[in-house]
Image (cartoon, rainbow over all chains, first blue to last red; front, side, top):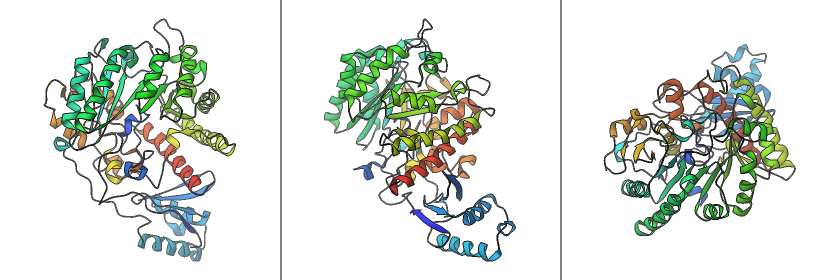
Length: 47
Length: 444
């Protein structure tokens, strides 16, 4: 493409093999007052 | 849904529902921004030929699910069936500091000063084990007040947790949030041995820290805690931790506080906006939020300068790993307060999270009883990015997962109404985090 260049392919996983719930609760990582999830890693991807 | 934004002079567009990101030239940025805002693209100062060229490229991306992708079906959770995997133990409703911005009434949590007895702590872990279902990884955060004011119970409950791990084949990640006042060699060794993650509260520059984080006698705590924290982190090596500061209206130049923390040798840093009603002189509110947003750009420049100089730091809210990021279920569930995450007061009362502790309207149950208020839990399960009107149409929904329910309730009177100031700050941080993630992928 001339004007638009993809720099990140779709990355929000859904469906099969997702939602296992084994990942860390987001508010307990560092921020006790501001919830953020995207800076956490999927526990499966991290292994 | 799409979101076009500029990160350090680069034009980018996020395809919200898929997470795809595209780099744009100025022409395509202007056109996509107009589309995002619902404006007529042909009113832009470009020729029809140029505009059509970009629209063809957009159509190609749309066809492969990378532009304005459709939203997925909402994920519905049944709170009553949801396992609890994470617990905040308020080990001490007491504190050796009297921080002026403390959400917990300087440790009292609306209920007077009290330490959690070991019997209550053990009952809480038993409750967690009996409600965690098949979850293998569990988390227990030792919190307060100041948890080290009850160190004997901290040691005992960790030992009990290790026993439960063996019996039930679980892995419990203990974490702690401490102000560092009570640290000594014995406690530091214990923390570094047993705590999976550690949050140390330190606001940055000495004058900023000491203005708000004071002892009961009104004296600053900086000189007491900094050497202790430095030694602890030196000894901790690669162990997970964060130096966690708070910025207020007093230090909207908080880049200087991050710099001060790095000059002390700390590299894992989280400096976060205070959450207070707009009427509080320390609050981030409509009159100063733009300054805070601009400061994030300044901070991003500093973080990048450090990286380019070979001395990188990790600023918690500027980090997103796009390729190993959480799944849609996690992004829609968020912190899990009231559903898979609960907090326990020293008397055993259970609340949706640490910020609700002491608020009787949010009492879920007690660790000495098996029952939980499933109606209340369901209201938290039903509070998500699919059900909150403001979140459903927000481009940042998969990055904050709807924000903090407690902040929403405290500032807007409803867990369903996220506070606008928090949203503005989150969006700015998210743009920077996505930009920095792309830089890392490209080796920049």
